[in-house]
Image (tube, rainbow, N blue to C red; front, side, top):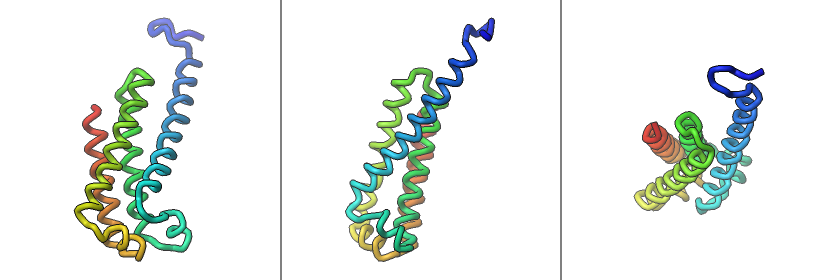
Length: 138
């Protein structure tokens, strides 16, 4: 069935949904992998041991980046622009962590030693960066 006014077939919308869903999730997974590669400690190993601070830091970064992905899906009509803005958001988040680690040189040690306040602060900074970055795409 074709929508007469828009000229869009319903299956086109479904394919577009699936494409953006899987691409968005792939981007978030890729971001998490790159983020954990950039940080000087092993978040997943620490999280498996029950260390909360790196979970807060990583969680804030992933949520912040996810907001950028969501905004990119909402505001870009072209798939390539969606991907480019996601890469831009990834770069901004990694830069934010690098600046935070530079401003607080003991941050990696504090996160690894379960300083929950440091983890929460790093997570909030990443979340704020993601919110602002997502808003800049509108």
